[in-house]
Length: 204
Length: 267
Image (cartoon, rainbow over all chains, first blue to last red; front, side, top):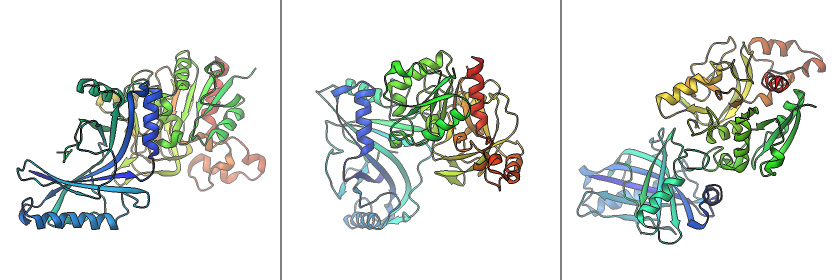
């Protein structure tokens, strides 16, 4: 069983990197209007252990974790700027029948758990350390690991089937030559394609 | 007529003025050209210089958007014909992201974020460069036999590749490596400022006419730019210089541009 808290950070205003990536894919990689839209968010995923304190069954334990993450986000400046960005938190449990998903600070589009969007997660092979000011414990949970990456979210024109969407994603992802790939540098970055809903956790 | 060198200005370039000065100081006919000038105009140049800066604000990754521009297809075509191509700092990142270094074709390497055991992130200081295995086959570095000092300033300058074959290729194609004033290869920070594989600071293609160099020879054109506290021969020269004329003498960075001029004259 894995308990994870996903913290997503997005610009309040338009994200210049996402706009540049969208335009580069449309014009320089030749996708044109097939790419309807592209968003980008930073993702910090915390892996938690709370068995001894009642997670995942106890509602009180869940609330303590949620409150601790909220407090941490309000105090830290180590990986986001609340003046410029919004944070969104999703706590989830995998492989537990009674799993409860807690969503805090909900904001805007695109959603992570609906069909119609595909995602590309990109992370450096050298990443994986938690922010330096992250507490060792968040409420009832102990932090046992952390991963960081960028989550690109794609909306395609028309209704391409799953195989076609995967082909489109592959064409924009790993940089292989001047004409193929853009968002992933395979010599120091890893990636993962996600068609449809984003799992929680992503990293296992 | 002097050979013509295009200094290509991308959105976000910020070293084109000193780059132009460098090629002119080497006796070449330099001109700053925009990335979106007609290909027919750009094709008329004898050599191409991609200067430092932050093309497209380093969005996505340093150099990657500029590397997909039509002008880079033209530069690649001219490089295949033998035209010299020099990329410095962000220009080097563009060449690597374009697959022109270590060799034209697939993207076989990366300039990753600086990463050392005790240090990561942006770093700037004067460092020393020593010749690497490819120095003699690279037109920009042929004949260099001693350590030359140069400023370096980057956050993503770590040459790396995903597998052993790629790393071996990078090492083999290293024309310049980070070193010290005595000519020894650097092993650790700060002489090795970014954790680059095999200490690579500049990687040249196998034809010897395309060089991706992270440090800035364009910021070491005159002796006056060398700091007096620097150890080694160049620091000694700087401390001994008294007159304005002496301080206006060539700095250590000119070795790269004189190499370019020599190759163009020979051609």
